[in-house]
Image (cartoon, rainbow over all chains, first blue to last red; front, side, top):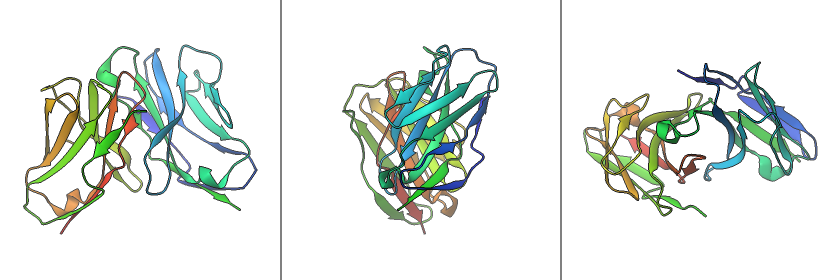
Length: 117
Length: 110
């Protein structure tokens, strides 16, 4: 079974600064996806960024980027130029395979990020 | 955009009641999921379905059942609600990946 560990239950950052959220996972699979989802207070959870394990290049979406270290099984999220709207709970998630398991994912416990003005 | 709609944002029920949580998606996704979210425990998968009338147990299926009679609708049923089922329930759907989530139902069992 896969496990996903987010070691930082809570973090804070000043507006406009950079913050990195950590995620490690454990798997024996070679093909998988990794995701970061964002859940703002009382709002819907949405996808922030995804990474395919077979791709060496780190994924980037505007101010959000990942540091994917496959050998170390590490998948951290970097948020640059933090904004007040980035305040949310962030979940790291793992999905094994590409065409299997009906898209079932394993989630970490979440990191609550607070952006301070 | 994918729309996943959960029937209630807040729900209060009594111990022993049969409770239905409904979820509808509008993107013809094969896969649908029910999670519960508790502080410090992340998202835990209760049940998922990869096709009409198909279902598979997740990590914590005890005390729950599901129904998927139509592709767009996935219902979570608490057969006899108990106080330890007080939680936030999230529905999601997907075609492969990623998952698209509803707004959640905060269920309180008194």
